[in-house]
Length: 389
Image 1 (cartoon, rainbow, N blue to C red):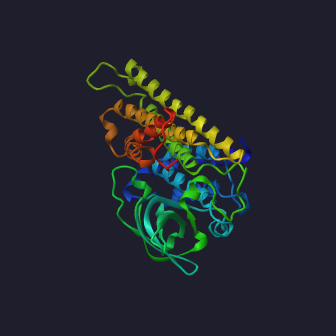
Image 2: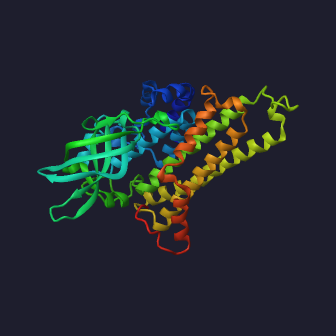
Image 3: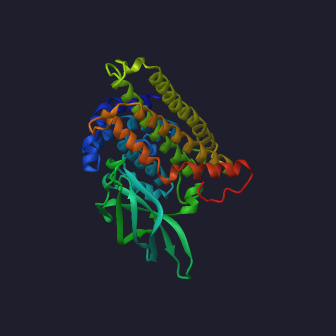
């Protein structure tokens, strides 16, 4: 690890206890405390994916994943938001140099993203007029910019899917995030009404997915031109690995002095079944992390060569990241079930980690069966039947 990464990881590990302490407040507010954001900002977290020419750290995906996992170990919601803001900042590097200069002007930036093409862009002089509504916009409350997908309506009646980068203050946030899991992410609905978007703030969805967007100098074998979806999935998986490691720590911390009610076991840690459960959970988490080295290696090797992953590699990344997420979910569920009834108290962090990982595992990006189907089709020599690779 280089000195920058070591320094960043040390800073993040120092704030993990604070992030964990703030968990109840984040859930009550349905948004993480400002203290969390300030601590991450001071550590340099939001510079991770910003190009060096703008004062960023420009870390590789494997290094980003390490940092995101550590943050998630402290607070699942904060880890999820960090993943969104960092991966979306990286995605802004797919825009023209002119757009990048505007978004990355301060060297540290938080960008949110919604892939669902729920917007409409009508061509006007110099750009487009944007209207739309996007639900589940994680991190919108703390973002500087927002990437939103929509359809451009052409005069000939045809349509093209695009992604626009819009200043967050041009969008309206609807206070509708009231959920039982990942409440601190503040993943509210955002609305655009007659918002002007300059032409250089819009890229083709298809070109973004395969890294062929134009008018930018950061192309080629820079080591940072990853396949878009694979890159995002890699950092998403790191959130789940971090949550699982945090839950494991919390479970073990509660064991000393705890007996098993209505039995003769006065120390739960001496109960053989508990030992088996702890070992099983630890192995599931380790297996997920070990699996992550495969897709991180593929993504980096392709980026170093200035290539996109093959469709076979992209399908494998989809299947393997979803499988790793499921391993982490299973590990946390096992530890939760192995806890006593007192675990359901809101001041016991483990119950929140359990609810959060259960809720986040429902995200469309990591749906196990859908992703395994894509991987399985490719393994069997069939067409993946999806462009979302």
